[in-house]
Length: 317
Image (cartoon, rainbow, N blue to C red):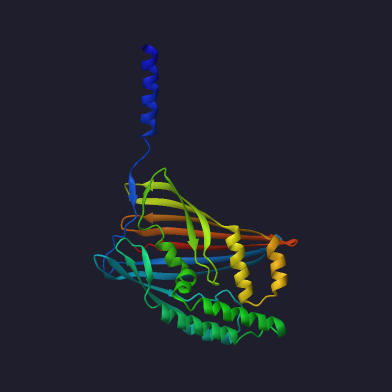
């Protein structure tokens, strides 16, 4: 009888210990009001390596403004104002830089639901037209290319231009920071919890979506200040990534036989490592850091690229 009692107490203690994990929910819901406005510093970094040698290390920063211009029981309308950064890291002629300066300030009008989940951009056609004009200006200024290289550059630009003429292209690539800012909303997170799921990313080159295995963990919680930090990691499916690159090369009219030979044996690794620090009430990011690393090895060569975005809340006195 004594032995049974001891075993029972051990089992009870184990059950109690198991139940002691923090079950406090952290709901990511937008508590915004008409007229709310916040400034953010957005920094973008692009780095590239070839054979372990860095060949590119560009960065740019700008201040963007988030303003709630309409609020209903079921939705919010946001105005996001920023400086256009398309092609900002390229070495263009002074004449082209002067022309591009006319496209400096951009206003995005977009909607979310009542939770703060991103729904879509209202004025995407206007943004598509603006983007098209910028691509046309760039293709007129290919002074540093000649012959076949110039032809290939223009072909590539024309294909990318088409990708940015759709609502999905505008939202997924040009306005990536907006999708990033609204990513956590609509979910209740728990301390010491891990969320795992499979996501699908749009393939802007016409093929099937790219699958990604995602893991989200709650890294830090400060209940008193209604503040938490989420960590999101994602690994893209290698075969889906390979198919996407083949779609891209086909659009660019790159030698098909040569491309298929290289891609068949290439090792492709694309991963995301993103950190979200939020004041979950009222639903405003303190800072967000995203990092996408891409590695390709094959045919005796290797290349790597890293794209980073940092969004920081600008505090005013």
